[in-house]
Length: 247
Image (cartoon, rainbow, N blue to C red; front, side, top):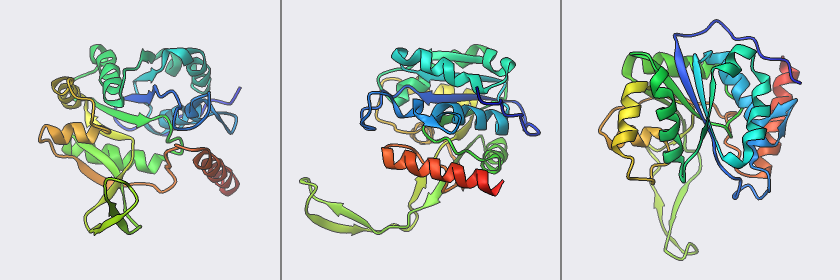
């Protein structure tokens, strides 16, 4: 069993919601990507450990597919006993948006006035304390924050066939969004409730935007890759080994 990570000096009290309800269809494996091995634990275990260490959330909602409850419970072994006890296992919905809403509903009875919530994808395990602090500082001031990275590649628009170039897209002002995204709990809970009939919003900043609410961007982290393929997992493993060697 991996040794639990000791928390750093904790930021102000916050909640956490980790989205781990995917079934792994795009990853191309019978086992969803969040349960594949990463170091001494799984991808999900590493995500849980790093978020706990950096943010010390007071309560966590872990949103899962019911077929993988045993794997999710095994991933929780990275956490100290009190953090495990403060984690709610929540069955996810048909879309990411629905899964987040269900997780927020599970946290609502325990949320305190003015509390923030981190919403993070299980498949982004290499979370740093520095990024957590940037997000927390920005969200404390503005009510919402997300990490972003510049678009480096030239962007091309294709026709409906997906084979013929139509135009080159101006990339000025375009950024890549990451998670975790941090919000005033009451505001993001209300926004998700108001948009419950939709299922096309792929991140929570989009839910805020759809309600006309501002979100503050902070510098993201290139190492915080989202695992969508086996090649991504291999790269994350290599980055983890590099981190260990540097420390």
